[in-house]
Length: 443
Image 1 (spheres, rainbow, N blue to C red):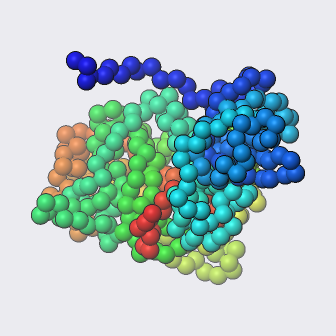
Image 2 (cartoon, helix red, strand yellow):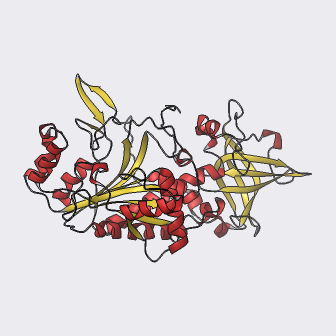
Image 3 (cartoon, rainbow, N blue to C red):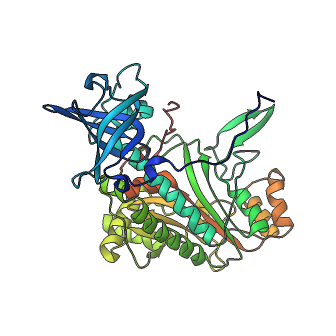
């Protein structure tokens, strides 16, 4: 039938993945958006923003078949140009413009100047105009690096025998419980947005032994701080047949080493643009929670306060002390109090007030929480009852325990927090593509 078309699955590589240096002296065709026009005497520099680079083009009346006045910033175009070697250019070449086809033009000028070295405005304005401000070279470099992080995590975990899973984000019970849970009407029933893939990770350990997920989670926390988001991306993994919490910490340390090495190799341009130094270490120090509280109390020259948790200021002080003593920007804090850990956290045999759990602090901010989980059905039900919980509400979760689970544990790493620490941002919103906090629901 004539109205039916058949589509072949043969897709060419994107043009800019090919090195323009290989085409020096040739005429090429390249598409992108006009990022900036710098008019000079007798010629002009036209910066073309492509998917990965900002390429310097040169306009001159002698070579170009079109007028300079036809160019408009943020127009989407196809340029025909001669590739000329230029050592001073970041890409090693510049394009001498010959012809142009305009694909689209902006309806109005951007309300924010985006083609300077950085977007010089408040963080509120930066986020209000996110669809536009992300076009800035430095702003989009943030998320190219974040993409590099998740790509490296996937490669590492898959190389260690982990299976990637995709768990529901609407459920009948919250993994963490408490007030910081989003409730919604689900066809007349009460349901919740997932605070974590925790229950499903544990269930799937009984299926694949090692699983991971990179996905959004939701916390209805009314914190209006530079470190909190109400929706963030969690990098989770869970491992079966582990009996020591150190095995989890060792896996995370190896994963982060792999991530940092991958970024150095694959995101050189973005790291240089944002002036990021990749940390290096032989091992990450680990310190028990109680000892960490004592150290911070000595630094503050006061008695131990809030004995069951680390305050944000304490995390900063501890990290500064660890950096000075060991040279490490990362530190594991272990053996957190039982009262401050979820009901599925495994308690220590020698001290039931302490759990086999940990946090990872990076430059003064908690980026990871993890630990061993209770795998025994009777132990889990007993702990739930001690906390005044109703095990029957968690029937599908406990089904996995009832039918047998291996000893297991895992962790969750906040992608935006980790990215913000790596890039030296004080506000985690800078590392969130379209952040959701207690004030922001758009864009």
